[in-house]
Image 1 (tube, rainbow, N blue to C red):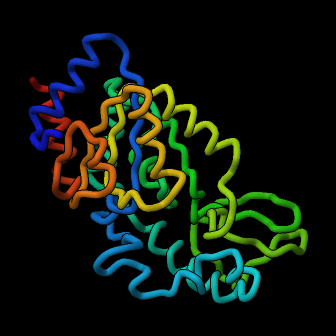
Image 2: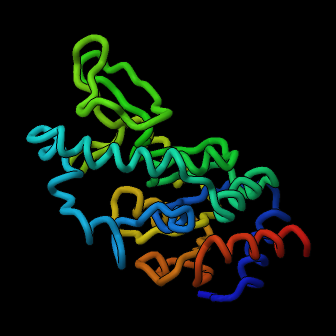
Length: 249
């Protein structure tokens, strides 16, 4: 495994010379840290402040939806006011220049889309999108809910359209993610702890099928075992540097 930027550039350019790159970017909470959205694990992570079993499981939702909504209303307000950082913008430029096709994200903050990215698979949902538990109609919030818990016009209770712990991921979406992983020849892993499955398994599937793996993260995770290149540091700093070198060499 290499740990320098030049090695990463060489990997990508070699693939590009062979033809169209079939690549995806897998992102996690670390990419949004610089947008003032807290991560879940580690120092100052959400799970240091909250018991996830009380605010992030389907059992907790069924038991006390008002408590869940109080937690998520705060998150909606935070995310609606958040802006993409240079890491999100760099990934959009990677797409624009043909160095990756898809973004598979575990994040629920829409920052990839705000940065202009296309083909974003939000496999854990989107916190600003809500759906009715009765009629299944979906809505997008442009401001935090004024009523907690919010209700649909049909009389059903609305819930955040996110995947809670102990819930199944959307079958169609995760099947598409696995299909992308199987066909990829290059994977960029950006800002993820590599602890949440099935997202964490995607790079292993890609590696098994011959893909090159490049990681941008603050610290080493389990994925370094299969990485061809690992760049340590804040991804909002390392990704723009990588992109600049890639486009100007």
